Length: 415
Image (tube, rainbow, N blue to C red; front, side, top):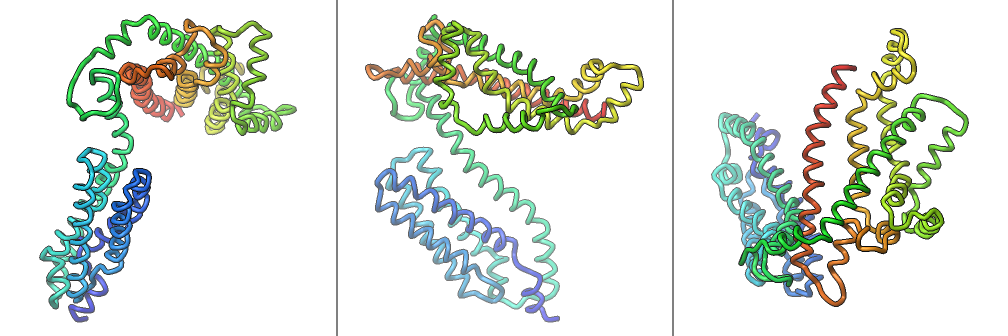
């Protein structure tokens, strides 16, 4: 077999295969990012972005093959034009982190295309007849580099998507540490802790925090107390109305919460539970209970019945089987369900706003909303309070992540 036919059949530089994947992904992402130019009424930049997407599509379909030097030169020209469009869009806008990220989807792929298409392996591959030994060397080189390039490409792509999440966080942190209560300004141009000091020293925030903790912890404990035995019963026992009840749980989840807002309010009013912690706890438990029961039932179904049968043979009654065998193995599911119940109550706004009319009974979501009114917007205080509210949730996720892994390991050993 000649070197040329061998190259066509087996050997393509890793730069070409990696570029094809990256250019394709970049073209798709840039078409989605055109929305930002449209929303900002930057129609000249929108046209430039559309042109860049078209050129990226042409570049994808015109990646060179073996002995296609003209095609490689054409791809280099396309990459140069795309790179120029990306630079033009960037300098036409204010230099911010968001705009740099937005246009990097054009600049980076085109810059790497210029670098790799002009590299020696690609140049030799497209312009010369390679010997069999050279093809073998190229295959060995591909084997060494392909994993590295894939990892770099994957991490760069994920890093870009992470920016979608990180940018709002950076913005709210900057607002919280900047003097005054106005939005905007240069990122990191000044620093102050006055907003955090004002929020932490205020009696209202402390009251809202206490109310949220009472309601969230109460919802978590009451919900688990009901959901754990209910999920186990649905998983292990056959009884009249079992299937209907499970279907009813699913049916309840299909309707938005606002539909039952008025009946909830009337029930709470008739029971005298408005402006009370117990009223919110009961309402949140009823809302979250169906999903909690389904989550626990699904986990209980995975626990082998043979373990319970062995415990019965050892002299355990049904309650001991549940508490000493099933429940310890269900620690991960119970932890996830408890975390879900806690966060559902911690973040809920509509029911808390409807059932509580007194500032002394506001939970954190309602209290934060009250900081922004039509007569005055304390954006700095609001940003600081939002960060403080999110810290317990972040810590819970970090704590439960490790706890769940340990629980799964213990459960695997016991099983």
